[in-house]
Image (cartoon, rainbow, N blue to C red; front, top):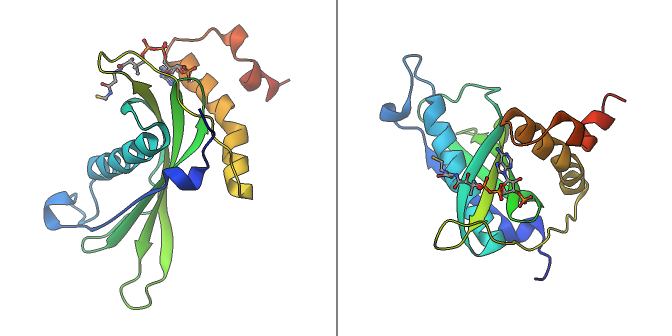
Length: 169
Ligand SMILES: CC(C)(COP(=O)(O)OP(=O)(O)OC[C@H]1O[C@@H](n2cnc3c(N)ncnc32)[C@H](O)[C@@H]1OP(=O)(O)O)[C@@H](O)C(=O)NCCC(=O)NCCS
């Protein structure tokens, strides 16, 4: 399989925040944002693998800024690293100022997807070739995050998390 770039997997979704999607403070409800990010990330992982993909884990979510009712929100997802059958997808969330059109980073998240066949069995995905400095930075740190996620899920022994342990040695 030929390697692909993060740009080839880019998925961008822009939508408004409507009253039914807010919390009592009139800001975007966290679960609604999680769903939007999951959708964009799923499309991105599908574009990379050209397979059916399932969400395996949500590794990190930072709700750094509240997103008020009526905001125009852009969710941008790109595969940040591909392993054998799994893909890490980085999601950046932006708010758009109504008057100036300037975009401010509101949130970010990291999801892991696994490509599967029609019976739900994991299948191999193409490698990822990062191009920009940011893509390379995210690529380099992804193995550490994968090990942490597997460790927390009880799917890896601490002794096998070599990349993670190197942080503390
Ligand atoms: C995700 C799923 C396919 C993994 O199946 P599995 O039997 O654990 O398969 P494997 O152990 O071979 O793991 C497959 C890949 O997923 C990765 N993986 C599994 N669990 C993971 C986790 N918690 N975090 C990060 N990666 C994970 C493995 O490391 C492996 O990656 P690699 O092949 O690139 O090295 C399976 O658990 C599943 O179908 N889950 C339900 C998915 C779903 O319904 N999602 C919607 C959310 S409701």
